[in-house]
Length: 131
Image 1 (tube, one colour):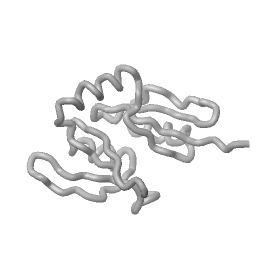
Image 2 (tube, one colour):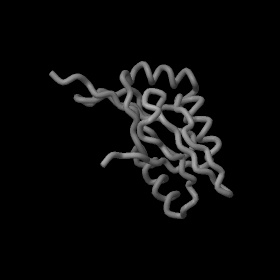
Image 3 (cartoon, one colour):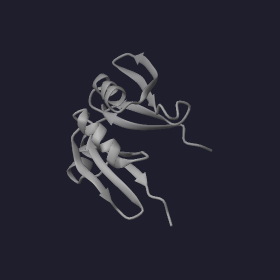
């Protein structure tokens, strides 16, 4: 068994698609119109056959209060692995991304958290080499 899809609920799928591709650097895997919404998935440039991130429309009534509570408590909706949080933080800040938590050393990992402009906080995480 393996993880094939994971999703993030977004306010506006087209805005999210631009942010996740043009700003973060993911690649479109699927973009299939399905009436009012689309089936949109993106993948990492580093692993184009890996896990797909679904940009889910935040249309279900339960999603709004759930995401609002996460944001208010500073809890990221999901996390992406990076090789160097400091370098990725600098790259994204230069593209106008707003971080709510700067790079923070938590012992075994370094994390930072940003606003994806689509209703979510997203964490980037670097695993530190273990001695």
